Length: 382
Image 1 (cartoon, helix red, strand yellow):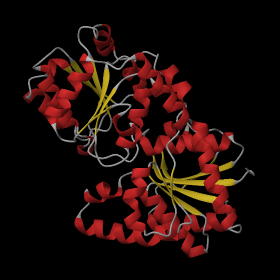
Image 2 (image 1 turned 135 degrees about the horizontal axis):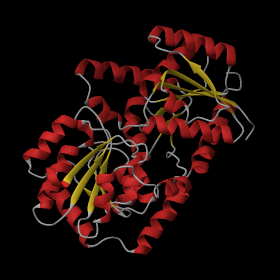
Image 3 (image 1 turned 90 degrees about the horizontal axis):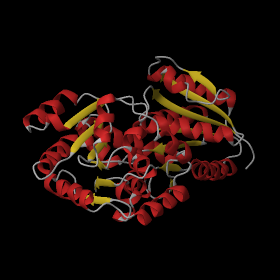
C-alpha cells in the first residue's frame, strides 16, 4: 500500500482501558508500516502517551470544550488533509463527522468498540434518543464504519441503515510480547504466596473496571457458591467506583479470607499466567481484550454469553466455556467443571494457533490498510 498520512482522534487518552490500548497499538502498527500518523486528542496522560512511537505527531487540544474541539478538527482537516481520519469510540467519531460536514472532508472512519444497544440502554431516555438520532444521521455519512466484531456490526446495522459498509476488524495484539510479559512477577507479595499454593487452592481470576457492567457482583456470588463446595480463591484485578460496594458484598458472603482485590495493575498478564482460570462475568462487551490476553498465556476461560463479541471470540464456546449472564449458579457450576476437568494440552495449542491467525498486530494493520486504501480511492481529494 502507498504510504499515507493517517489521523486518529480520541477524546480522552488517560488510562490503559480497552479502546485506549487499541488506539495506541493501531497507531504504532500503522507507523511501523511506514505511514505518517497524527494523533489528535483532548486529554492525554503522559503514561499513555509514552506508549506511542516517538515519530507519531501529537496534536493536544488540552481541556477544550466541544465547540473548541470542532473548530480544532476543522482547522486540522483543512490544513493537513490526511488520507483518512479515524474516530475512536462514539463521541470522537461523531465530532469528527460533524467537523467533516463543516469543511467538506469525507474520509472519516468511525470505529465502534461496544454493543450499541447495550451502551444506549445504560443512558437516560432523553440522551438515548439523542444518541440514536446523532449516530443514525452522521454515521450514514461515513464511507465505512469499522467495528471490533461481526456481532457489534450486526447490532449497529439497524442504527445506520443498509447503505454504509460495516467492516469488522478484530483488535490486534503483540502476542509474543504478551507471552513474555506474563512471566514477570506481579509485584504483589500476597498474590505470589497464593500462586505458590494454587495446586491445592486454585485461583480464579477476574479483571476489569469495577463498574456494574462488568458483573463482578455476580462473580462474587458465584464464587461464594463454589467456595461452599470446594477450596478455591478469587482474585479481581482492577479499580473503579464499585470497589466499596463489592467489598461489602464479599464480607456479607463471608468469603473475605479467600478473595483479593488487587487494584489496578500495569501487567495483568502476570496475574493471568499464575492463575488457574479466568472468569469473565461482563453483562455486555464489544471486544473483550481480557479474553484474548488470558487465552494467549494459556489460562482457560469461563465467560458470560452476554451481548457483544464474547461468543464470537470464543467461537461459540469452542475455545472457552459460555454461561448465561447474571446466573450465579450456572457460573459456579462452570467454574467447578473447568477446575475438575481443565482443557487438554492439545486444545490449548489449538487456541494459540487460533489467536496467531486472527488477533496479531500485522493482521489488524493489514486490515486497516485495506479499508484506508478503499476509502482513499473512493474520495481521492479529502
